[in-house]
Image 1 (tube, helix red, strand yellow):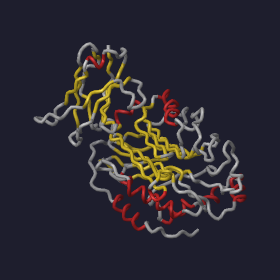
Image 2 (cartoon, rainbow, N blue to C red; image 1 turned 60 degrees about the vertical axis):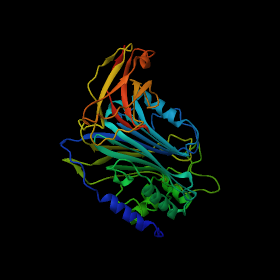
Image 3 (cartoon, rainbow, N blue to C red; image 1 turned 45 degrees about the vertical axis):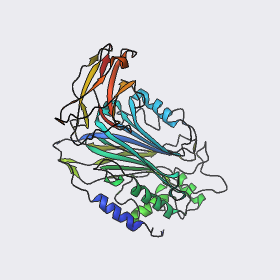
Image 4 (spheres, one colour; image 1 turned 45 degrees about the horizontal axis):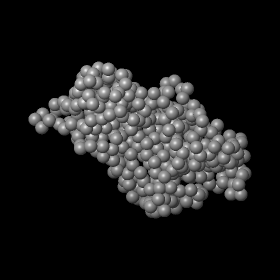
Length: 434
């Protein structure tokens, strides 16, 4: 296969060399890493509504379940995928920490409730690449976060379609990489993150293979022969795209294009060649925090052919990665407080902020029921206080007035410190309101 050298490839090289030559890292006193798991799903749902059952797609019978779920949809349309996914994960005690949608490109991240106190600095970004960057039918939505002193980002993309548009796909990736910026100083670009997960409908196709031959190779499970003609593998091998990224072994049939409702490849007059358009790539930096190495292991990479409503099959992957320690200092730490509140009187809470954390106007502390599923479902809130000028390290006090609590039912609650844009910075112990 021959490809035209993309005009932006030189720029890509300069970007990646700058990003991959990492700056000085904070040192860690921790000797033993905490191993966490993240489960990713990418699926072009072709404008169809959510399925009735997510058990296979999300592997909900697995033991253990992952610490995080990151789900990327393309062509999601106006259907309530957010609500359907949240309902499926609710019995398993997950909290949605962020979702972001660009037209049909929808990304959502959930964290196991017991892991929520470890998560901070949640941000999201969007990049429009359709029609020269003016429309979001193509592009990417991404979500990044810190967890136990390491950081990760999930990028969900939908790249230009059609067999011949390889250079357009390369250009779109360049645009996504160069345009997305984040507030976190240690990882203000996509490639600065300790762990990068890139997934989506990449639209890279299988070359030099007629439709009938491709279908026959699938029947014979000769996937390697198809992958020898895979456009994405070719551009990665050539260094034009995703240098140093990895992809797991593909031992499943092409995930595109099916007659909706069937397992039959495209029988329309176009007879599109079965291709691996739906992919999950990953990258981690070769660096350490103290004695702890940034390290990742892919535990599975598979498709889910039982889901037939779209012309694509969903693809999932499970990863295990090193984080630092459960004792890693959070941005906001709630100081020991009364674990039982009397709603007939004012209740004072205290918290301390890490020295490198800036408390800004608009930061707030929400009170949530113990089983809350997202940060929009607070029962009441108070604005975050300011650091004492006399001692910036002293705890900050905030009052929850009795008037805010009088109508609340007696049960357990939790406090969450959030920035103006809804980024989680700290979680308290459980509080009983009597």
